[in-house]
Image (cartoon, rainbow, N blue to C red; front, side, top):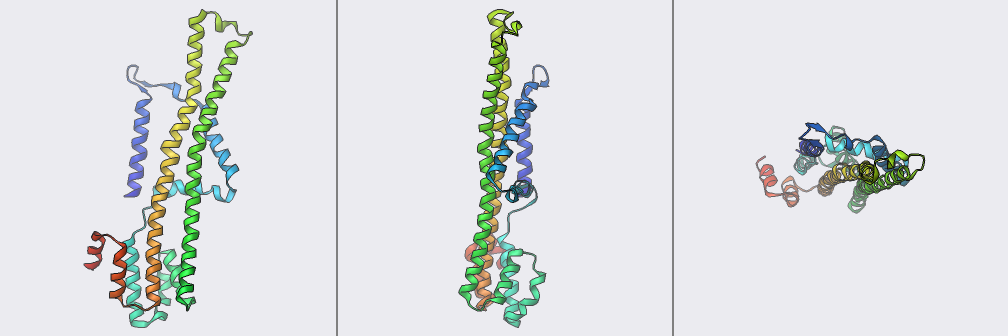
Length: 273
């Protein structure tokens, strides 16, 4: 449902912005909202600042992050517990070595890593440290990507304001230029109209900055945080379950221990199986 919510949010946001830009009296969209120079200042400046702030290898997170919010669902703790319980039955019947044949069949990358580490480490404390280090590394990587979008959300309005100032400077320069007497030909009223028209064009960049910050960058960072929190929580369950497998706990005892991680609805589903 996360992907559906993302699509609904994008479509709803575009509809609201589009209706706000529409002149219902004239029956057309106001072209004053479209300015390629202002768009270049905001987006170009935002991405330029991002490239300066982050190494090139990390900037690719921007593309993968946008794709992730449209293509990924939050990780399921229900499936994680089911996989652990399935492996616990194998451990009960065949012992720890019996799980080794199942490693290549596991679809979850973190669970595959966890079981592989379980086969390597004899000491349970060393196993726990290895899995927790892997989890912390994943957490830092996710935070870095989220921070990138949060920083882009800060850059966009700043460059929008810069574009506004640039537009005002160019507008005032054109109005005061002695080589352009036509600006004053209509008297004070004509000069004021030209000033207001130029100011409207200048403010479009601020509009772009606020739009991209609040409709693209901040929501993307927020959705990535939701997906990251779900994945990290699922991996914590897998760590707990892997340690239980290492201790060769019975499936019933391990199931009762894992129930502490889930809500009542998930408990009922697991109990019914």
